[in-house]
Length: 98
Image 1: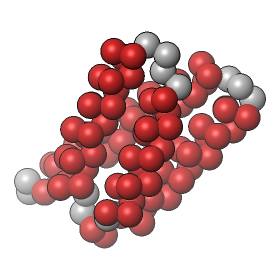
Image 2: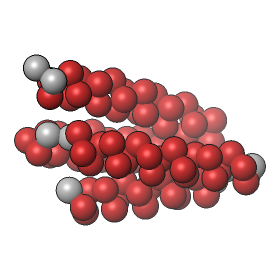
Image 3: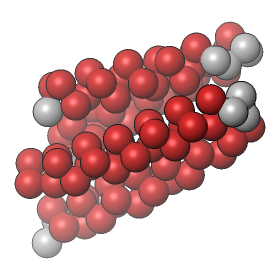
Image 4: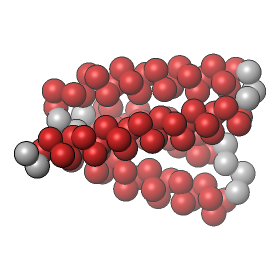
């Protein structure tokens, strides 16, 4: 899990570095670190490979948008992937409480 968290952190930092507004960039970075701590504590070990594959797909999608210099698409893709990851996180939390 630590390697997955590190790669995820590196990716988040690269995306955040593209935000020109410093206060917004710092807020995004702080929120990421709060979220990743929750993920690390919540993610069932048996789901790590699945989450890694989902993350790989996200990175590929974002890289394709960057190759096209479509920064608006990068934002929409990242927002969509974040939304889906929080939905999965809620499922994991609900499963853990059963």
